[in-house]
Image (cartoon, rainbow, N blue to C red):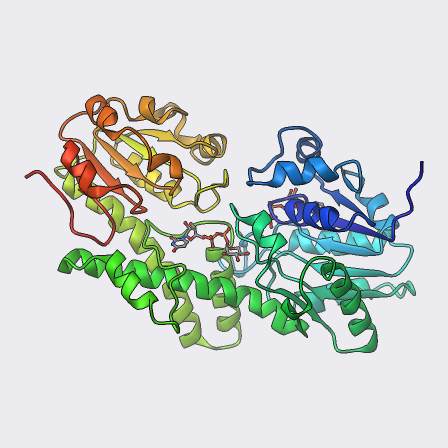
Length: 460
Ligand code: UDX
Ligand code: ADP
């Protein structure tokens, strides 16, 4: 039986954004055919298997109910482009590692290759949707490439940044705070925008679909992430002051969060923020500001990243000074390696730089994590046998001098810490980089407890 679909939608890039986003569109819109393509055949094989390439609560169910029905994963990008009317582009845009803007600007080579490939393969007009986070004015560059050949084919470029957070991606996609669509204000731009709005209207209330000009949309994505990261750096900066003054960061966060203008979300002091977006997007913003001669603005936003580095450095310095100024030969167990709970993603995880600093001190590192051990191994590949990776947290903690909590997995809240204490070297230390365990209870068991932004509980 040949099913006739109302629309053929393609997504180029089957990553953390492209995969879940397309699965949700397929789930909510059985009348559309959704195809997801990627240059990486292994990744596509995984999307077509029972072991999906990313861990995300609810994703397996979504993919199982749509794959083969109206959701398809394959590597034939050319065919995908030819057959679709709407193309989401969700390829990676890492920070540039070379040349002008190295370490700051976005590396747009994957984007440009995609634009050129679309141009080379397209036989009919298309709407191109930027899903990846991109520097302002990328849509313009995209449009210039797409209109460079006078092929007579019309390409309309829209910006539709994705605001999902990992670990809650499915919930965020199903019930988004807002969907933002930026378009050019021409007749054909507005027509294309309305077509995209129509897709989202299948499940998103219309008052949550926001439209804007294309530059505002591109910039809003960078600014959203910058504001979120700034909140974490703000609370983390105050956590360092709390540690000096015996104030308690949880009490301070609770008190300030009661002010509706401030709000109580995203105020958890931590060992630092990680993830593929925050640092990259802020540096992108900083680069743009510098480019436009706004030095003070650039410095302001760059300080958000600097405080994040300071927080990680501080954490390790605290471990070092607490543990008698020497970590050499001591077994340190990291509880968690993912950059946050409910994901296996370790990109820019604070655990990476903390591991490196601990290894520099000649500590013996043991890493445990329920979902991120494979990625952790890749991140610390260069250290070979100096780091061990142990799935079971009890086995991981056995024989260690200290535990450092890196990720706020629920699992670590409910462990039998009496048992763990017995298995550890004494004096036993716990450094809670997420403030998730019961500090008093651990202290009563015998641990010396070092939270973030709270007085330490020590037995001497
Ligand atoms: C972020 C944005 O939230 C999302 O809208 C955007 O689309 C992509 O970037 P994500 O990186 O997946 O999402 O995770 P997020 O929940 O924002 O957390 C980022 C980092 O901040 C994590 O390392 C997290 O542990 C840390 N964090 C978050 C804190 O340290 N304290 C908090 O209160 C909140
Ligand atoms: P994000 O977190 O933004 O989704 P990921 O790195 O998880 O980023 O995913 C990006 C995906 O894009 C990767 O699977 C990568 O193989 C794919 N990709 C990169 N360049 C191209 C390209 N030119 N054509 C198709 N896929 C690409």
